[in-house]
Image (cartoon, rainbow, N blue to C red; front, side, top):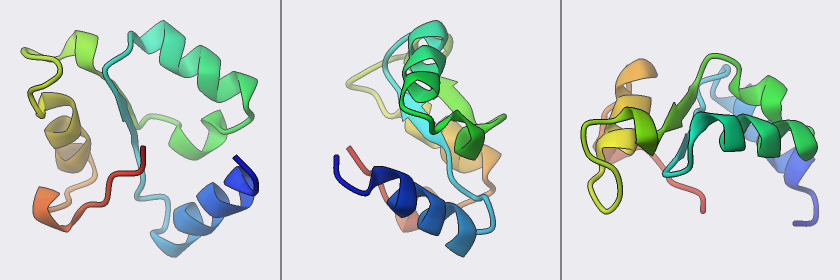
Length: 81
């Protein structure tokens, strides 16, 4: 993951903070991993867990929730995995 910090920072800046973290993992694990790698500040208030959705993977609920929170059309969102 070379340059992940500069890449996330550039995306965060380019989209005025309009980015989110959506994962099938539970919220505690997501937040712990983001803290561990030093990226949590970019996703403050925009972390979505599949465990908190009506349906988790393979259903897209977690991604749709993230798009809705960003007031973004899901067809115009990018997913980085």
